[in-house]
Length: 156
Ligand SMILES: [Zn+2]
Image 1 (cartoon, protein in one colour):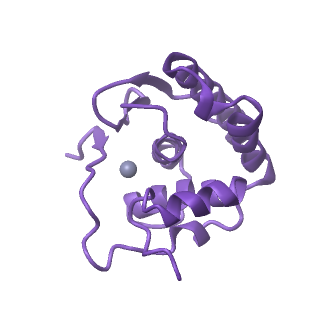
Image 2: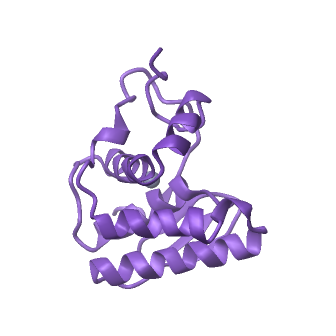
């Protein structure tokens, strides 16, 4: 039986598991990209107190779900990061755009959207590409500082 919960393990990527994830979904819709820009830049995701940040991520999920025509997953703060498949429940330890999008991509896969067979590769590629498309300067800074997991070293 398949496990009903996908738990993110924060272990350093083994050699060979690094990919240019930021280029693997160059075709994410403009509408999705705009939702992320609005969430971070207009509504100030990274400046809000935690409770309001989580509330804003819930609203981002609702907007994604309207676009993709699927139910909106629940989101709450927890001690670890996961997607519970049957309950469509997402836990995050803190407000994180890439983690929120990563878990949302697991939800999209449940509802039939997938590009890469490996579910973690698929979720990393979608979330990291979305960050790159929406906020290229912030993405670059985070990559340079080694803040994005599973990316190869910053060039140069
Ligand atoms: Zn995952």
